[in-house]
Length: 451
Ligand SMILES: Cc1cc2nc3c(=O)[nH]c(=O)nc-3n(C[C@H](O)[C@H](O)[C@H](O)COP(=O)(O)OP(=O)(O)OC[C@H]3O[C@@H](n4cnc5c(N)ncnc54)[C@H](O)[C@@H]3O)c2cc1C
Image 1 (cartoon, helix red, strand yellow):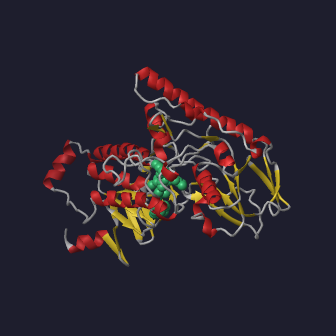
Image 2: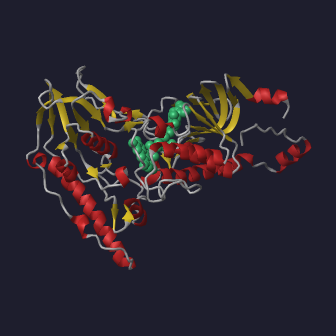
């Protein structure tokens, strides 16, 4: 390529050099963006990944200090690289971030960090999309949103407007020392809420944990981790949540080598369990009287997995040791027998609230026809209703495993295949076009560092 062509195809702003044209633009370089880049590279699709922060930023700065992966290292990884860790251990969050950075390096992924995509619109006078970024405008034939399933922390409207209380979302929690002295109410008992509550309790805090509907698989059963069980029982591959279970969170933890989440055990260790948080009023908080029901449904889910595992072992004649103690039920603590329905926050010594209440997505920058009336992405396995626009990493994109490390890799493969197939259609020339092009060969350009 001549210097002139290169200048026309690239723009330089500060230290960032990005092309002005690209076939496929991937937005976001978390695990989803890295997986997309690997598959596009393998298929020879010229592409670029733009990341507003750093590679795998969510794992670096968007998670609490002591977090380890919820799945063991043999499972929570991409096929192309292993963790430098005992395969049954749980990788600390920074190791997960480093893993994705090293993974991207391994195939020289064309990632530009520190570049934010601000707006994507479909061109009206020519194919493709105009992409406005923090360093200039790029024309792309296709765009893949890999901006994450958990973008905007959600705190429900019931949160009290009480300046005296320290209130944060779980995304802003890092360690017990950041909270003011005193008790803590943790609202939400999915994997984040339950692990944060446990850590705070172990640090000597008085902790109240508000528990809603949840699934709580055994950490391991009969010498197999629950990730293995969900795999062999086909539960990772479920295409949609069971009706009525759409809002049921999953409580698992890899902390301290991995332990089954057992709310009765946590109550025995000093955490005060309460039902779903209902409302705040006059310095008080009220809870629904649903704690026993929520625990019972969690138990049901737990026991159903043990039963399914036993049946699988029997059916396949596997030699895995029996584990009757997995069915042991801890005694109900006082907070379960006599549920607290009202609490005076000051009298209970609660000075902080941690909202472990989940996340929403924000696609305000993606101004294309790929959303339904509620603003939900419309797609089939990531291929959106707007030709040329794709999603990866969304919850239930193709299956239950879609937001998980190993799951997004498979979804990205499908999306990359679709892109490669569409490129084939676009490249097709009929006989007269082929003849004309043979006379006047099209000038081919290549972008340095961009494959
Ligand atoms: C507390 C917690 C623990 C988890 N533990 C596990 C686990 O153990 N195992 C597992 O498999 N999964 C786990 N997950 C789920 C999932 O693996 C992570 O949420 C993961 O970060 C999702 O990866 P992603 O690439 O889809 O999104 P993200 O990691 O969120 O990456 C999206 C990237 O896009 C960038 N971006 C967003 N908008 C723009 C823009 N406009 N322009 C440029 N860049 C942009 C962001 O900066 C970000 O880096 C966990 C999730 C949470 C919240």
